[in-house]
Length: 472
Image (cartoon, rainbow, N blue to C red; front, side, top):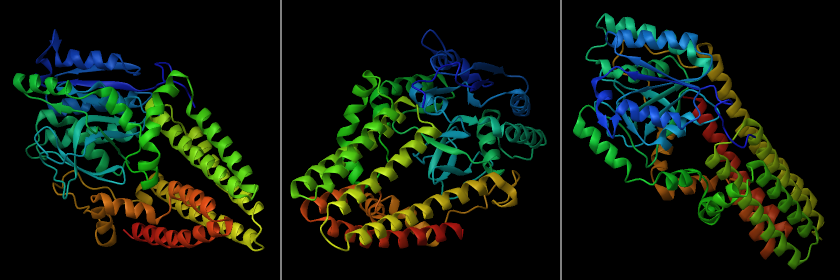
């Protein structure tokens, strides 16, 4: 896992569309376009290309297509009339995956320069423009679109198709300022997976006049970008125990870890060491040993949360780091099972330990095989995935989910219901808490019975959810 990102390690280039009059509006000692250029110069991008006005929307789209066909790495497209926090740009441009993604705000109040989108499962599944409508929109697009190297050919094809449609007047009321919006519509409707990158409390607004530009720049000063970056390092969708009993204090360890030059992998290793010590104490089989093991297990889980927070803060996460973290979680948990069983005097506790381990393996198989099937469907695309939707249809025919899935999404908007849903599936935080509490207060037999009871309910809940999602 790399400790930092450098210009040499990135393959992202940026295309600035300086094709609207607003990009020449004053900002400080220069223009909005100059301001964006200065911001991009502080980020790890390989090159910045500026496309000047050359003949309207169709010409702009063909220019994007030309650059996409010759690019050798990910390309980010953004309008020159954008007023945005540097940290908001970094959310997308510094992400090591350099995948296809769009910058969005979960503020669903759409407007002429903030088209509606619908986000499901962290992906943009419907995108709008002045011609393309989005049923049940729940977010807005904020002007920054990145296409991965693998999707550049699709981006070029879509840009050329849109150029032909715009030139023929088949896209109704679309205006020259909507080039990026239309590209997002095209990618989404063609079946390309577009990750939704939320800006949270940060600002990203396109402007049309000097007063709007001045107001947008003034709004930027109202937000502490450093604090927002620290807050964003903590997972928003984590479980109840992790959110309120761990992340509430581990977030304060992120900056000290950075100063000490600790990498996420180092923290993962320390977490694994503490879990092994917990297993040793559990194996003693004494009340004091179980209490010490419970405390060490809690600290191990805290560091398990911290490694992810540190990776998100420093933006140094990688497939290798994610794999190492996942493997470490499994090994730590099973080592604790062995320690508890070894220290128990009950005759049947080893059977319970094996049963709990098998149940957990089955639950992980449900999760990983489903995730793998979804990834395979995305790669196969039109042969397995949903058919592409025409750019000539103003109404997006893909509706929001109904039935159980719609109810589940509504529950997500209620804080209490959302945490109850997460607790039902017995995520790792709740499992570690359950093990620590039952082992400290009772014994290993109670721990394994609790894991089997709650884990069995969680497995049925997960299975029902996967079936419901697959039936869409």
